Amino acid sequence: MQVIDTLGTIELRPGRERGAFVNSWLDARLSFSFGSYQKAGRAGFGLLRALNEDRLQLASGFAMHPHRDLDIFIMPLAGVVEHRDSLGHHAFVRPGQVQRMVAGRGRSHGHDRVIPLAAGDALAVVRAGARPLRIESEASARLLIFDFASADQG
Image (cartoon, rainbow, N blue to C red; front, side, top):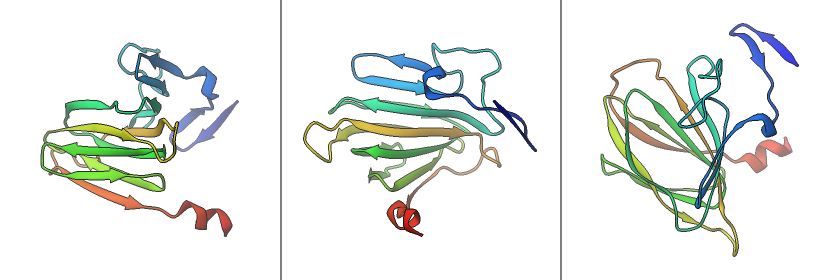
């Protein structure tokens, strides 16, 4: 099924048709070409360059790694992400929260730890990356809090 939008043709892709990357601590589902998953015509959509659903094992995470001219959004679905970056920002990002990190001219960041909310939990997180509207901007980090429970009720 396809829907025509002002941005062009949007392809509706069920989760089972998304790309995958799996190792001992990460099970990632990828919407667009990334790393070892390369699919012609799936390099992104508009400014969006990455839209991944990750499931991480406890006490795991992404080591510090660099980005430049990319806005990164981290949205935990289950568990808590401990996030640090090279500018000294440190945050615990929980379900119902979204962290937006602007890489700007360059910065490194990492998801140091995965913290369960309940016994046996693994972390489920949606990560998105988009090209910024303004290139060469200053780096920043912001934690946005959404009350999804209230939004569902009204």
